[in-house]
Image 1 (cartoon, rainbow, N blue to C red):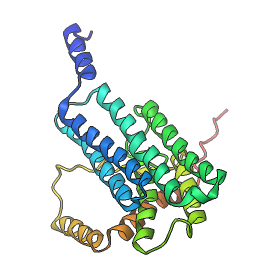
Image 2: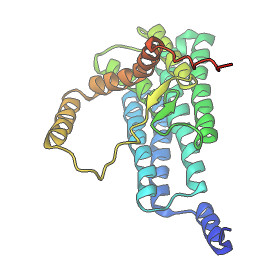
Image 3: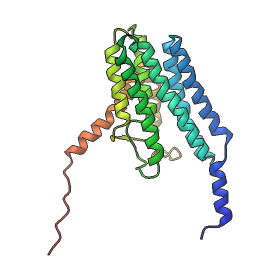
Image 4: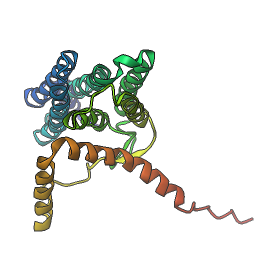
Length: 253
C-alpha cells in the first residue's frame, strides 16, 4: 500500500506554485500580449518577433521545471493558458491585422479557424498527455503553427510585400496551419533527445552552422524551418501508407 505521508507529499507538490518555471511562463505570456498590442498598432514585425520570443520562453519553462523538479498542476494549466494567448490569439490577430482586413467575412473565417484549431489542439494535448507516444505530437504543435504564421508575416515584410498583395496566400497558409493542429498527423517531439548524453564533435559543429545560417537571414530561414517541420507530418503520413500492412495469421482449427 502507498504510504499516506508520501501520497500527501505528492499531492502537495502537484498543487504547489513554484516561482522559477512560472517566471518563464509569465514572460512567454507577456511576449504574446506584447505581440497582440503591436499587431493592433500595425507594428507587425515587432509582433512577429515577439511570438518567436514567446516560443523560446515556452520551451524553457517546461525544461526548467523538470530539471529543478518543480512540476505542478498549476504550472501545467498556467502554461496551457499562456500558450493559448501566445500561439492562438496573437498569431490570429497578427495575420488578420496584416492581411485579412480587406477579406471581410473570409478574413474572420480564416483567422478563427486558426484560433479554434489552437484551442482544440491544446485541449487535446492536455487530455491525452498520459496516453500518447512521447516521441510524437498528435497534430502540429501550436508553437510551431504560430511560428509558421508569424514567420510568413516576418519574411514577407522583410521582402517589402504588403498584406493586401498576399492576403489569399496568407489565408490559405493560416487555414492550413489551423487544420494541421487538429489533424491526427504525427510530428516528432524531440523529447527523446538526451541533453546530458555525450555527442560527437561534429554534432556541436552542425549546431554552430545552424545558428550561423539562421543569423544570416532570420526571417527566411526560420520560416523555412517551421514550414518544413509542418510538412514533415504529411511526409510521415505518406510514408506510412507505403508500408505493407501485417495481416495476423488465421487461427488454426
